[in-house]
Image 1: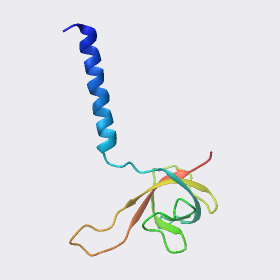
Image 2: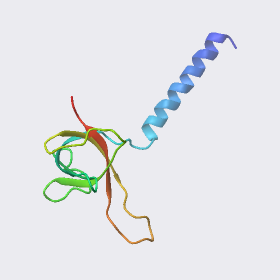
Image 3: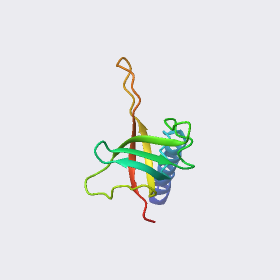
Length: 112
């Protein structure tokens, strides 16, 4: 088999594999932006509001999402009114244990 045909075939296989993975693979979380309502440093409880929060499963009826903020050391702490870029994770208890609701918020203050 000539080398150019072999290389083209390999490139085609890689592209096809990428497309199949992108179409059938798991949904990736969308990074969204909201406004900080409150933050409690002692418990790391963060509450957010805004258009992007309304569709979150754990949001309250008044459109506020509260959860535990998970972050690396040395990041800027959020203050009321800050724009906050985030993703959430439903960390509810596993099957067979005592039910509890828990939302973990990963993100940072958006300075853009």
